[in-house]
Length: 223
Image (tube, rainbow, N blue to C red; front, side, top):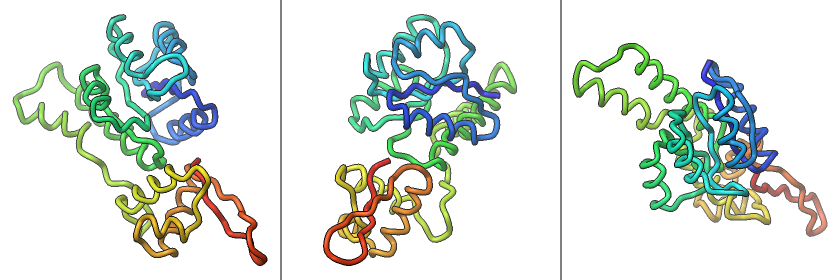
């Protein structure tokens, strides 16, 4: 079993990430912590193979945690789970050994695909002490870097899901299906399907909105 440490300051998100990891075959959650200092202590005292690391922690930045791990001689792998979209942050993440980078908010399928890629990489790396040639090196790195296919319901696309997800993330006061349709350029029916999908996967919350007389409008809020 690949042992995962979940590092996330939001208790609700941390529990969601823990649940997601436990649903992926071959992975187990070694622990859940909510700060950078606790992450470093946990890795020092316990067996951990990979850290699922939020970057915006209450006591420090995730990149600082990565640097501290390397400075302490730890070879634990890191999968960044963050809303950080700054290219400078992404470049630095690569330089300090982050093997995967997953943007929030994300679906269970997205995280599962990243973990599956990581598991295949570890399996290939464990087969032999050295590679036969450049093709083997390229193949191993491609295992980590090549995006997997999201397991979405039939008729749904990753591009539209990403667009609806980003629209929802930018709407702290919630979105109706009609508003999401206007923001993404899809039909109201399509927008509602994707919003419902996010809600079913724990990445959005449904809430009735009582306005004019009649049936309340359902709004969706970031999960």
